[in-house]
Image (cartoon, rainbow, N blue to C red; front, side, top):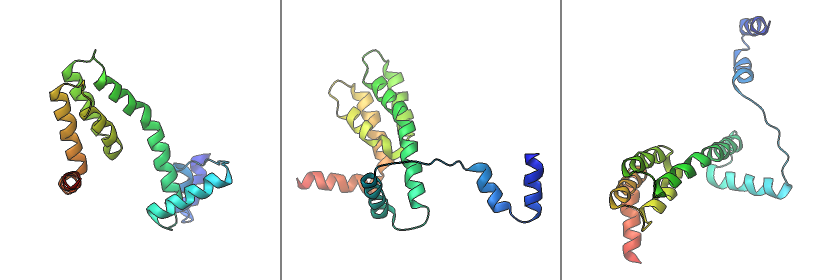
Length: 146
């Protein structure tokens, strides 16, 4: 029955509306007014006043919230004394696959005095890959000037 309804709407060139209905969910939230205002202001500062930016920011926040337990677990695995060095390096690689959100965790690993040198080196390598040469050069310049 649902497929027939979709097919009839497609015949009437209403396909854009149907695709939105099929692939997107809807969540209604109730948040304190001051929180909403601060969030909107932050979205405006970071992304500008463009249609869809608020939705995009909420999706990013939800995605980060869902990834957080996995990232924390990988960090704990690397910092654990019970984990083999080869497993620690694999965990660092997996952590780096989360992208820029993992940089803080990789820095924490690279600066931990209890971590083996090979593991520290792998974390530093991943940080460099994630940041890129220009950002690394800028950071080094800023640290030297201090």
